[in-house]
Length: 374
Image (cartoon, rainbow, N blue to C red; front, side, top):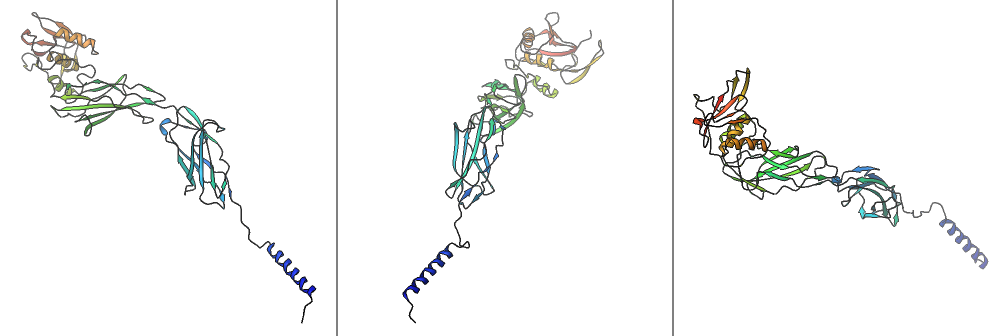
């Protein structure tokens, strides 16, 4: 059957309209737009106060919520003003973290200032708004200068348990309590440290005495550093000082038994070998550690005490009695001892005893401890 030309045209129009209607059907898929919400700031938290020593600081955000984006990266900005007109650091192209957070480490910032930070995310051709801005504060820097060695200084000769002493460090900034690290080594390079000790800061100066003997007749080296206990900021070490150890002198040996440093402060000059401790019991009570009784005052006391030992040590170093008294009082070891010269007496008067030069010979003398009876 043959169709008329007019009928054919009508069918074509209907088919075309059906096709258009089908293409506009709600069931047909459409491409979604990419969207990224601003990340949420985590740390430093708002108005956080950080120590200068806490640097480098890590800045972190909660990952941005996104739709249709992959390969998301973050930009972090830090400024000294909330409008970000004065940016001090920008960290771009920071890959998104896999644990729900994205973190970047800042370069060191100047201390004693307020800072502002925010971040935004970029992915799929879209960029989020910046996160809320958080402020944080970095405290001032703690600057610690090197302590100054007091003694023993380079080339000194010491006992096997020398008193290492330094002037306390000078510092600026909000420093806390200080400790001092003392090190003793057998080389100036400190590749083999044989003794270390940490001491609490003293008044004006800080010291350390080893609790066991160092090697005798050895050349050793020491240094010390000051450490801020709150921040961990440490000074550079003192200049390295060398010293040579020798055996204990007579006075040092007895002081060791007492558990008292013979010379905790200033050290007298001179070399031992000019005096002998008398042990003849017909001439005195001897120099061994003992408890004696002073009858006139009905007082028991320990003999020798540290003052007696210091006088003997000065005589052993070549001091005469009057010079020994003067040195003690001038160098932080106050004494009321009195020297009664020969030829009548040749004795040093102390509170409970006399220390007598045997046979009234003062030079290179043997010194006897005599209990006072008056």
